[in-house]
Length: 118
Image (cartoon, rainbow, N blue to C red; front, side, top):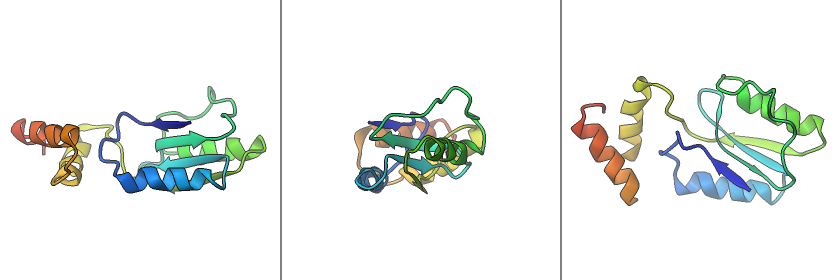
């Protein structure tokens, strides 16, 4: 199972490939966001208890990785780009989406530019 953050529209095909490749050798793969959260998380064996993890904090990726290891699951953190948490993330998002051929990404880029958020 692969869970993709809806706040990470700048993910590229290479990010998805890295997660899939990681699952070949690990029980869990965490695509760590630049801010310490996760943009994607994938598992072959299910998750440890997630309720007490520091969701929405810079320590989430490391805490989730540690929880996996404590419960006997192998885990790896890979670079996962960035997610959009605040207005200041919109300009980098627009730059990342510039030239993206995927229709939804093109539409989002156009909207950011038209609304002067980029």
